[in-house]
Each structure stands twice: as structure tokens, then as C-alpha cells.
Image (cartoon, rainbow, N blue to C red; front, side, top):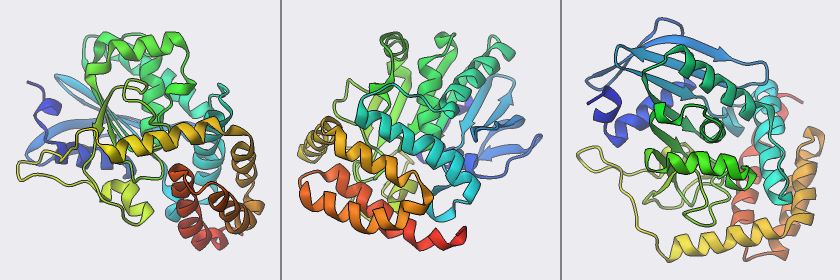
Length: 308
């Protein structure tokens, strides 16, 4: 049994968090009692896609870095991770048009290159938030799906709607090896409408609502004494959220316009204080829109002056 397969759920989350650290070539990565390997490649693409390759004699681990987030973002990370990637993905989903941001394509090329570089190895993929999104698209375009031993994806927007039939068939081949963790109270986990219309198997996290950024950064995750994550079976809360996602994605016109406008930094404050309030009052049954409103209003405006 490989090292990655021996890790507990809690340890896999800790390993994924390493993607937010400034890892360097040669860094030794140890999680608990397990030596995962040594960082052998650090990728920081021009479009903002970042990933780390960790190798040991028996397996390769790839960490796709997520967004630095609203509170910790810089002008560059906002441009590369939010304005050029996260928000365009949401806009594409709302308009139901296939518009794939550069980072996703770069992640796909990167994964295939690493697999070719380490032919014969078993690959373990991790990603949180934007890292999950990049990993989803990379897996959908993986030229050697048999090389993927497992993928652990956390709190990423479901990009199933943006995939071609060929890409959907590709991830379907790996479905039992892709574990997609979803906290329905996380504002970023949009697009979860049906459990069979997503990349990988749904792992429905047993969570409770809390402050949005904390929620997104695994704040609602609860672990058993043995390190296993507490999960739920599909319940009424999930079904209600799913229905809300359907409504959000089906009413594209005005919401797409809203997303277009918040992509411009000089419109953020005005849109967050006026347009969000207007839309949430008009569509009070849209839980997904309420989640977005809470995320932007409570966190975005706090840090707006950092780069103005």
C-alpha cells in the first residue's frame, strides 16, 4: 500500500494545505508519521496556475494550489485567480457557454507532462478551491487516466457543465478514484445540482454554517478520533441546495450581467452594496445567490482599499 493510501482524511487535508505554502525544490514533505516525498518540481505559470510535484520511489503526488482568497489576495492574485479564472468560470456556468480560462488549460497540459515525465508511476492528485477546479479540468483531459491512483478535491466549483461529452466520459472512467468533497454551506461550491453530474464521487461533508471564509477553508470539517472525516448521506438540506443551484443556473441573464460587472475592480464597491442587495431581495429563494452575496459583502469590501 502506498503512502497516500495510508493517510487519514485529516492528514490528506493537511497535505492539501501544503499547496498554500511557499514550497521549494528539495523540500521534504512529511504528514504525521508518513514521509510523502520530496518536492521535485515547482510550477508557477504566467497565468497564475501553481502546482507542486512531490516524488518518492513508489508514487507521485501533485498539489494544485487554490486561490489565496478574498482576504489575503494581492492585486496580482485577484487578477490571475479571481478576475481571470474564478469569476469567468461562474459567468460561463450562468450563461451556459463553454469558456475555459487559461489556468484550467495550463493545469491540463501540466498534468499530462508530469505523467509522461514519470511513466509507470502511480499519481495522487490534490486540490482545494481553484486547485480543485484546475484538477477537475486536468483530469477531464488526462491522456493516461489509468495512471491516476486517486484524486482528492475539496471545495471547488463543479465544472461539469463546462465539460464536453468526451471530457465527461474521461472523468467517468475515473469516477471511483476521484473523491470530491463538498460543504454545501461553502459559497464556492456552486453547481452541485445532481450527484452524477459532477467530476468524481460526491463526499458530502457533515458541516454547519459559519463565517464564509472560515467555511471555505475547511472550517466546517469534523473528524472522528481515527482521523476519518464525518460525512452525511444525501438529505433534505442537500436536495434543497441542489434545487437552488438549478434555479441559479437556469436564470442566466441578469445574474450573468452581475458577474460581468463585478469583474471590474472599480465597480466592486458599488455592485456589492447595491446590485447584490437588489438581486437577493428579488430572488430570496436562491440560496446560492445569498451565499455569493454574503461572501462578497462581508469579505471583499474589507480589503478593497489595500490596492486602491
